[in-house]
Length: 124
Image 1 (cartoon, rainbow, N blue to C red):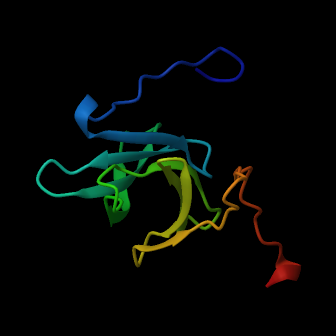
Image 2: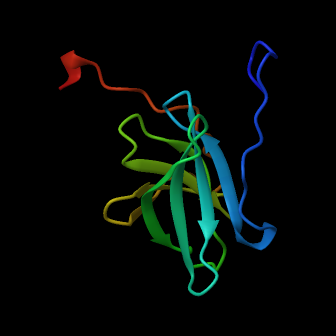
């Protein structure tokens, strides 16, 4: 449902056993869907355009070493990285290469992801 309550749209989700997440895209008319492959331990990260219904694949990643799918939390502004969690651990995943980087945390502490910060022209 839109923020103003005027528009409502159903999002086609994968079957229950294949779902591993849905998050908002950086583009206002898109969402990011995560779906576990039925045949192999791979997650497909797709973009769904809410206006057209078209989808495109951002990347495919291997299911975590724990055997559980990653749960996406947020996509980077350039849509190249995704922050995901599994078993209370957070990871940065580079979608084009599948590189998975564990987010450092303290043994007795925790790590909370707030948001990606987009680069400004001055940062480049």
